[in-house]
Structure formats: structure tokens, C-alpha cells
Image (cartoon, rainbow, N blue to C red):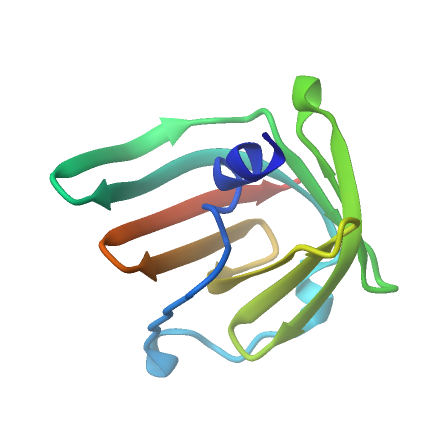
Length: 139
């Protein structure tokens, strides 16, 4: 259940991950820019498996909040679905998140300003493919 909930926050950031990003499209950012609390706003993405295909665009979701602390810890508050915590690290345009149960997730930071964070995830595993883009605002 936690994996599905987190997929709604960062997009099933697991296994056989394939990322692509254009280095020229983002300015070098500091991990200090991530420090603080971020509220989810909306999702855009798709999921496909064989003939199955589902797409979503600008799906509003304000139920989750991430708090990134200076000491490399985080708290994920998913409202009614509960809380989780763990460690985070940042390198170039990639955010690595390790949950309390040892599950490691990673996503691409597409945009980070003092008010807006856009995270992307792209997973391909055989004939399964998942892409998600999550927009968050700083609280």
C-alpha cells in the first residue's frame, strides 16, 4: 500500500529506472534549496503495460507534504495514509530517498526555485512503463 501511495507522490520511484534529462535545461542548484516543507499540487503522467494505457494530466493532489531537513532526513506526511521518514541525498539533478524500511527511490529534479519543485520519474521494466511528473510548492 505504501508503494502505491508513494507512486501518487513521486511516481513509483523503483527498480530498473531509466532517466533522461537535458543538462542545459536546468541551472545548477544547491541541495540547500530543497530544505523546508513542500506541498504536492498536481500530477501529470502515464502508465502502460502491454495494451493497457492510462494517462493523467494536471491531476490535482494536495494531500501530501514532504519536509526535507538540513541533516539529510525527511518526513513524508500523506494525511490519512500516514507518515514515513528516512534519509535523502542530492547529486546534480537527482534526488535519492531512502525510506525507513530501506526502500531506495530516486527521481530527477526538473525545476527547483524558492517556491516551486518539479520532480520526474520514469520507470521501464520489460513491457511495463511508468512516467510521472509531480509539481510541489514550498510552504
